[in-house]
Length: 131
Image (cartoon, rainbow, N blue to C red; front, side):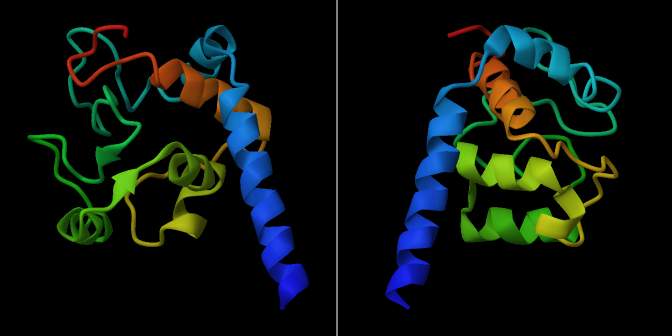
């Protein structure tokens, strides 16, 4: 049991370090995979998916005017947040991590791609302005 706790802590610490090391410039290129369904930045509007301004630490299922899956509506009701760690796990395999979501994207298996994407998205506040 003790070994399991240590292994979990090390894994979590490694994930946090990877997120902190993301490259926003590279993340802009990774975001090209998302652009068909999502927008970010000033003037971003909902598309097939919700706009992603201020996504990090934003309440799940909270973009006005977007029709979320029942799964995300439930997370919203519980007050769950899109932390960087949760987003990284979600983006690795969206339907595997959160069954019932509408997102059909297969995911980003590379830790570096997810860290870079999160660094890019983390630049935008709720209004789409760069921080």
